[in-house]
Length: 212
Image (cartoon, rainbow, N blue to C red; front, side):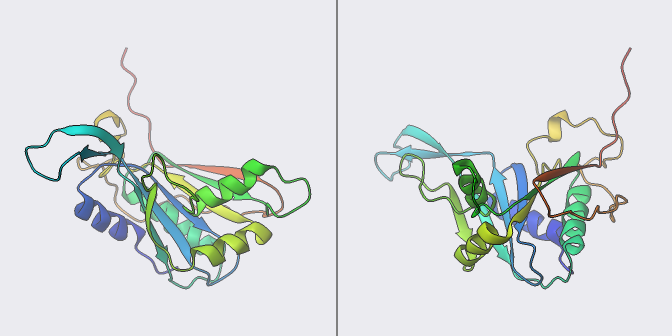
């Protein structure tokens, strides 16, 4: 997968000027299908009764996440795995958690599985107190969601230190002063089994020295 995820994420951060809480990537196990990248921001929007500078805030609401559809072609899930690992490594994440989920359109599936599938692809059917949860640019989201329900899906989650909420508490000697690392990522992908629900955690960080 010839995709510079870290460059795309940094461009979004420069535009938003907000710290990141987490980054997720969702894909269905079908080659050359789009993937959904979602950036979860830390920040609040002031709500005013009047749209004038001197009006005081009457409430605060969370800044919506940003979901973007990526249409780069890929042949194998290892390509997507590698793209997620390289981005997480470069942006200073401590680890990457990859979840493999079965189809939720099957006998015995629980209701929560349908909700978690929607969450993975940032397809929220409703807002919170009338506000959007996600601002998205994903024209094929509904088709991907339908496919995920019958074929299953994978989701990657990592929390960047660079441009992230965790920069002030990071204690990792592998990081540069700006919270990044020198690419490429030295951790190799592990092939998914796609037979049952499973979770793989890739450890990227190095623990800081213990203080006696």
